[in-house]
Amino acid sequence: MSNPNVAGLFLKQERVNAGRVAVWTPVSQLTFGEMKHLAQGVQQGLLGLKPVPGETVLVLDQLRPELYSTVLALLGLGLTLVMVEPWLAAPKIERIINQVRPRFFVHNDLGWLWGKRLAAIRRIPNWLWTRRLLRPDARDLIIAEVDGGLPGIITFTSGTTGFPKGVVRSHGYLKCQHEVLVRRLHWEADPGPDLCIFANFALLNLASGRSTILVPSGWKQKHLAAAGALPKSLQPVSLTCGPAFLSRVIQTPGFSALQSVHVGGAQIDNQVFQSAFDRWPGVEFTQIYGGSEVEPVATIEARRAVKKSREAGFFQTLCVGQPIPEISYQLQTDSLWVTGPHVAGLYVGSEEDNHNNKRLDEQGRIWHNMGDRVRGLESEPKVGDWYYLGRSAVAVEDFLLEQQVYLALGHSRAFIHRLKSGEKVLVVEGRAPTGEIAKNFSRTASLTIARDPRHRARIDRQRTMVKGPSWLRG
Image (spheres, one colour):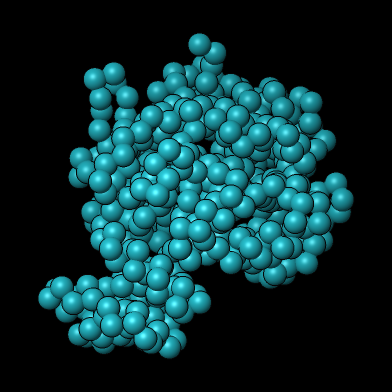
C-alpha cells in the first residue's frame, strides 16, 4: 500500500501548480509554492526537538492560509494534530489535554494567552509561536512514512454526554475521503477555484491542486462582496457550503463563473434551493447528505431532490438520494448506521459516545450511528431514494407535523416541543398558524428561533426555549 500521508498529495500538486493561489482570504493569500516553503519552515523549526510520528501537537491559530501550511507541515512529519473548540469550559479543556498529553503546543498570540490560563496546557513541554515557525525555508518538505491507522487530526467538540469527544481522522481516513470526494463529486472536472466553508474540503482542494476561496466564519457582507468581486483567475467555479451560507451568497452580487454547487445538509427549505436555481439556471447543484464524521453518505441532483420533496408534501428538501457505493449501511427504525473507508474512527475521551454511536463488527470495521431517521417512502418502494425524517430523538409524527406547520406558515422558523405531560406545544417565531393545523397543539409560544452556532441553519431548540416562559421548560 502506498504511503497514505496526505501531505504527499499536496506536494505532488505543488510541483505542477507552484504559482497558483492555494488559499485566498479577504486579508491574505498564499500560492501553492509559498505554502510549501512556509510548511518547510515549520518543519525545520520542529526538527531540533526530534519529533516522532504519532506524537501529539495541540494547535490553536485562526483560520487563514498560513494555518494550512502548519497543518501540512505537521501531517508531513506524521504528527497528530489536536484541535479544540476554544470556547469549551476550562475543566473540559483540562480533561482533553490530560488525556492526549501533547508534546507540542503550536499557537498564535491569542493561543498563548488562552494557554497561559490553563494548568494542563502550561505543562506542555514545548511551546512554539506560529510567527516564528512560519518562515520560508528552501529545504525539502518531509513526507514521513505513516501507517494508515495513525491519527492525523483529532478534533474535540462539546459532545452530547457532557464530556468532550475527540473525532479521530486517521491518515488513511483523510486519504480515502479525498479519493471518495474526487470520485463522487467529480472534483477534478472543475479545476478552477472553490468557494468553501468546510475545512475538510479545503484540504481536498490542496490535495487536488485547486484554489480555495475562504470567507471567515463571521460571514461579513464585505468579505462576501470581496469574494464575489475577485479577478477572473480567482472567480469561484464551484461552491461548497451549507444552506445558511448559500442563502448569503444568493444575496451577494458576483459569482457569475459558477459551474457547480455542492450543498451539505438534509433540511434545506425548498425555496432556498429554488432561489439558487433561479439565479444560476445553468449551474449543476448537488445535495450532499453526510456529517462531520462521514462525508458523503448519499448524494442527489438537487433539482430532482426538490421536485421529489415537493411532490411528497414536504416544505423542505428531505429527499437525500441514494447511498454512494463506498458506504455500507443498516437502516433501522429510527437510526441509520454506516461504515466505509471514510468513516471516522472511535472517539477519544468519551466512552459513552462510543457505546451509543460506534460499534466494531467481526471484520474489524467501525460502524457509525448518524443519529438520523432515514427511510424510503412507501409510495415509491422500487425507487430506492432515501428521505431524511428527522433526528432519532424527535418523534417521527412530530417531525412530519412540523412540515405541515411550515407549509401553513410559509417558513420553517418553528418546532414542536412536548411537555413532560405529553402535551404538544408549538414554538414559533411570529404569528402562529390558524385553522385545522392549530388544533394539534395545546399551547403556542412565540419566541425568536435560535440557530445552532456551527450549522447556522439548524434550529437550536434548547437555546430557543431558555428565553421562553417557565411552563415551556416544565
